Length: 175
Image (spheres, rainbow, N blue to C red):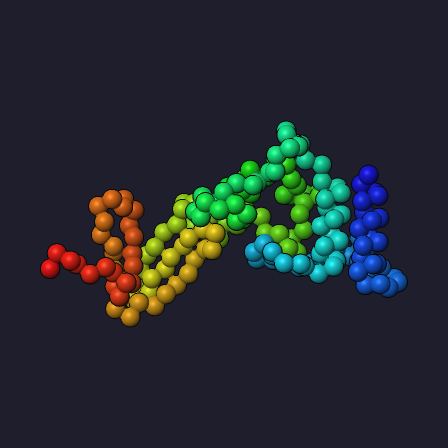
């Protein structure tokens, strides 16, 4: 079955380019290493490499009726968002490393730069309280210049430290 799958993948490469010799080759895998998972279509060699890896991957699956990794995002609650939780859930049913692993030309495992260190997110002020730095999975870290400075948001119900740009801070209605 593995051999047949690889032959079909090679023929797919030939069909894609409608040419001889083959545009894809099992001896020359795509050397590209992405920094984040690609959601579009990668190059033909990368797609071929992924098909070969799929043919060679032999994971242990407990329940073939379940879709591994189909979990709601812990941040947005939506399905289909790549998250550390969905990746961890899919790990036993896929080949993340070694023989048959997903191709690095489109897949970035573990997403540590999007985890924010606590799985939830954080905010902080930098550059003498003029820049608000936010980390929120699944998007990662972002920076914003605060024209009126960066301040701590005071809310007794929020246990973690939360910072906001002063210009966005709600006005004090107490007078």
